Image 1: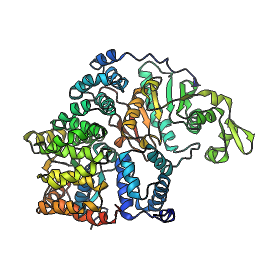
Image 2: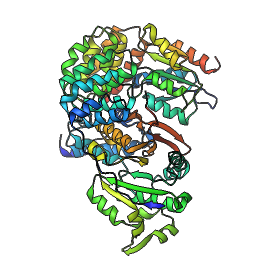
Image 3: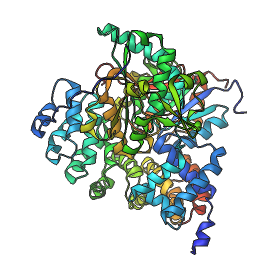
Image 4: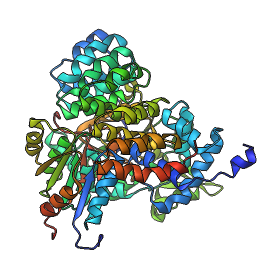
Amino acid sequence: MNGTADAARVLVVDDAATVRMYHCKLLTDAGFRVEQAANGLEAVESAMVNPFDLFVVDVNMPKMDGYACVETLRGDTVATSAPIVMISTEDGPGDADRAYRAGANLYLVKPVDAARLVRVATMLSGAPL
Amino acid sequence: MTSAAAQEFRLSTAEFERFREYFYKRTGIQFTTGKRYFVDKRIEACVRASGHHNFTAWFSSLRVGDRPELLQELTNQLTVNETYFMREDYQFDALLNPVLPQVLAAAAQAGRPNGPIRILSLPCSTGEEPFSIAMRLLEEWPPISHVDVEIHAADIDSDVLDRARHGSYGERSLQRVPKPWLAKYFHAVGAGRFQIDQGIRDAVTFHRMNVCDTPSMRAFTDFDVVFCRNVLIYFDELSSRRAAENLFGAMRPGGYLFLGHAESMSRISPIFTPHRLPQGIAYQRPMGARQ
Amino acid sequence: MGLVRRQTAEVTRQADPGTLQDRLADPDPEQRRRAALDLDGHAEAVPALLARVPAETDLAVRDAVLTTLAAIDHADVAAGLVPHLSSDDAALRSAVAGALSAMPASVPALLPALLADPDHDVRIMTAMVLADLPHPGAADWLAEIVATDRHANVVAAAIDALLPMAGPQHAAVLRAAQERFPKDPFLHFTIDAALPALAEVEA
């Protein structure tokens, strides 16, 4: 079911290879075409040359953290309007606000429930349920 | 383990994956499984050369960085070391359009409609890169008739610089030079070799330079375009960060930086802004302060 | 017009360290950036450089400050950077973790305190530092986190950092982590995926 021409394209952004692998598996099994980036800078470069329907972005990453990544994705150099889900280990009250101010659509706290991730990815990207 | 047994060792799939992940994390470069044979052979050669008894010991030593020559050997094994004229010339296409027009427009706004526009090739090796740029500008950039362009070329190795200044090349290096340009800018010097004419040699200024050395890199300022291809990714973390800062300081705000086609600043430094060109991604020194 | 040859600028003498330290607070970010880079190797400038870390608003200047500090791999530097691992500023704590991960001489002494920090986010950042710290003991410290930390996200971060350097000798501690966190699907998936590959790695 994955890899069809119509499948929504997701960019999974996390410095942890294990997390990338896990989110990639969940989303691929749900029918998405998934690509990966290991930090915010790589994500921006990938987004500059590829169209994505959804971004899943971790907060704590070297070289460029998740908030800066999301701000850049929304800014002039990339200017994507695709939905962005931020995922973080932080669950302080200001953290979600910070994500929304940066331009994210949703903020989830790790560990992310697998079914929930697939559900929000499906709804946000407009893929058929 | 006898040395004969050591000769026979083969990289397991788990070891290949481990190395692949490490290399991707360090450089951003992904080896596809199609490259498996290529990488296996090179790693096996590195392990043998290192004297370590197996991949695990070699890899551990590489990660810890206790033997800098291991990284050097790995670099030599994994890169295409050969340089030649018009290598990765899609970037020279980008230079002609849209980079130089944008640079010239900015110069005109700053009161320098006739330049000088400054271009740096670092490392320049035996000169093929700066001389390629020179010929492309002379042949394919009409504004060269009224705009001053400086081409500077730098390398850490004084032997290659001597060869660059001398400017003589064999057929392999010249393969991609259009025949009319070969006739126009080179003369045969025997044994199948051609030397680039004095006029072009004089047009490029060569420097001995270590990109990681901040005090000496201060000699380079206000470059509009820098080519720094296929060298940064092989430095360790701190050296590559310092090199990126030194390149930043050598550039005019708004100036363009080209890395090698497989390279990315994403593992090196966040101080440059990626810039999408039709031909791929280049980097810019930002105009104002970045928060 | 055409290709012209011109000399590069005469290199100005580098200012003395005192002047460079003063320039760390110059209103012009380029002055601050160059001063930070020119202070390469100047241990006496460490307090002034450390003071810039939380205060600096320009990305390239802060990067230069941290690049210079990380190369001075000394106890004072590590001690001065570690508090920022608990910063609310994600960019700052990531940048500081990046610098610490290049300091194998001075970070080890601070690890006992970091691994015992009551803030689980600090312990997660510590795992991230250990992922890249070029020190032969990194795997052991990470294995200790996997074995003893009570917080699932910390253990997850430590496992991610450990796996690229793990060997068959780590299989037991990974299985034990699965048992300690029976309801964590990510840990189960990750460890199940990692164990067969570990068996293939020669010790």
